[in-house]
Image 1 (cartoon, rainbow over the protein chains, first blue to last red):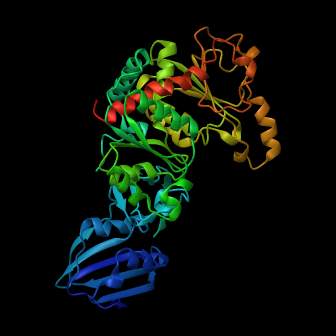
Image 2 (spheres, each protein chain N blue to C red):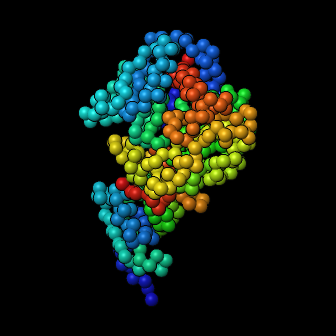
Length: 151
Length: 302
């Protein structure tokens, strides 16, 4: 029995798959897709063997720079990035968090300068082996990935 | 893009740079009045009051022949009119050659160092960093012990929130110390700093008992147990008396032991300790002047 596609196939572009359903719209916002004029297909609450329900984003004729796409690793580390050319998957990217994350996270420390003045936040990724932690470049507090608040 | 001339955190300085500052401070102790900053203007921007630190920095500038501009309270500055830190720093940096800054928000000094064309010296950013305090602690340790290597250091009191003890651990990590952390359960050393010790092969032990726990120590570093840190005030009342150092507790300690405290103290050191030759906290505060002279000279390239 042929699997029926719930989301239309893509000719050229990027597919972000295996997003946890509750993270989908955060990913849309991180990638600033509201401002993107390309054709975008968004599916959510689709059936997934692994996740139960999942989200998927297909963007036509758009290929992201690695530092852009890697931001997703912050909130959906197991998402899959597929590059499509002429209906074929030509590249699969495992996500990798960059050493530094700029202007995406809000510092959870209410006494941090970045929560009081117009300062772009910067976080250093400190430990990726056991539990990923991020250290604020300004107030130097460390937070676990789970505590991170996306701006 | 870090301005290497600014001093924001003690971690900005390598072991060699720390030793260079201590050496230079010893020179200023021998001869504090050297007019090497003649014609230079140093701005002291105190967005929250700290009389001790400000006077120490301002005295350092004046003894080096420089001049001071600035404010001692945000209420008397344009930040009370809503001026951003960015604008204040840009404006002041067009007048002065260096900025000494105290700010209630954490990270303020790092941010200032990124926008300022002149060096920033962090004189305290909220609960985060106060590197001149750390350097004067190191200076006091070296001066009283004849060196910094292989010392037994007991840290007492509020080890959870006390920024001075956290910075001291980082700074001492270059010199093979052995630590004892003496604190009530509520104010224990955070895991983050214990991890730092493990990663750097620095041995440490923890205890909640003050009496007889520091007989092998070379340095006893006391901190204030602050009432506002406790959720249960009965717990505070219990702890505050346990963590008071009395003169009779020093009987079995090593002859070279010296007691340090960042000051101000409240009731954690009984006044009967003051006359004991092992009490060093007042001289420690005085050492702050020489350290700040050394820091100012370094950031201004002398």
